[in-house]
Length: 114
Image (cartoon, rainbow, N blue to C red; front, side):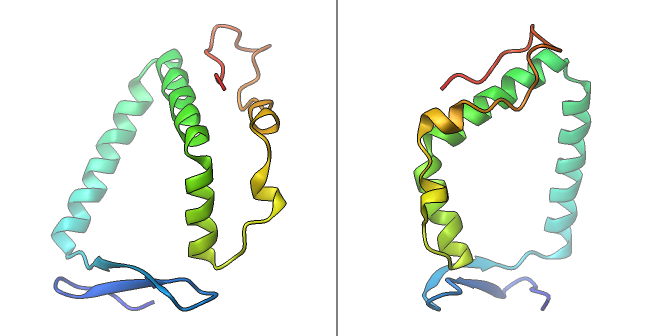
């Protein structure tokens, strides 16, 4: 994989059609190291947060992802160059019927709200 440096750009194309999707600026070493340092700090803060707070944040994220699932699915399949199939078109009832956290073990944790 080629390295991109400051001033260079990395194009993203739909692999099925070759159509340009976006172009991203390259990052220099300082910007990369800054991003890694921020990610490490965020991971430490997340580890120190109470489990109930982390579960509530994860549930909010899940709701947001479900609200935008059609747009996100279209983006994902475009980036991969694959067509949208019935697998991507599941009904909200099917998707929301799944639970990522076992409530019988942790009944106090908030559950997904569809």
